[in-house]
Length: 162
Image 1 (cartoon, rainbow, N blue to C red):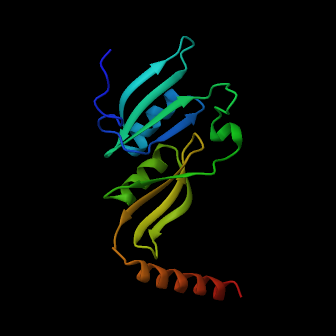
Image 2: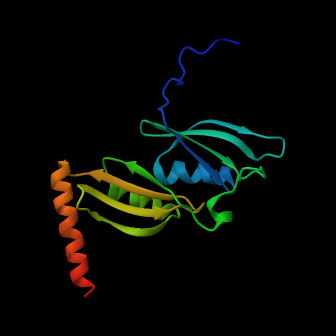
């Protein structure tokens, strides 16, 4: 066994998403079709369930596996009744990816539109309960510009609810 050259594997970033899915094999197929993922590796246990899979979207790797009865949880968002996280996916054509994901079976949570922070952005939920924000940066703003736009946005929202 060769000793690792680096503490962080080649092509990997410091942080990576690891998704737990009910029926990970179907999830892999969905991520390929809906988000353009490339499957790098798949390892199934004796029962055929996915113990570990590696996929890549753009320059980012992510992992997934089937639900497993473990003391620490091992449950998917569908088994838990939702997810507290959103995976942010920057792409040069967020409209295309958003429509492609919807056509593949994702559900719109927030319509895609231009946002005050400089992104063309929308949120969808995939068939496995994971929430994805699909975005394209359309404006580079300073923190001051973003803060001013945010205050203006929330002031307008408050007026609409009065």
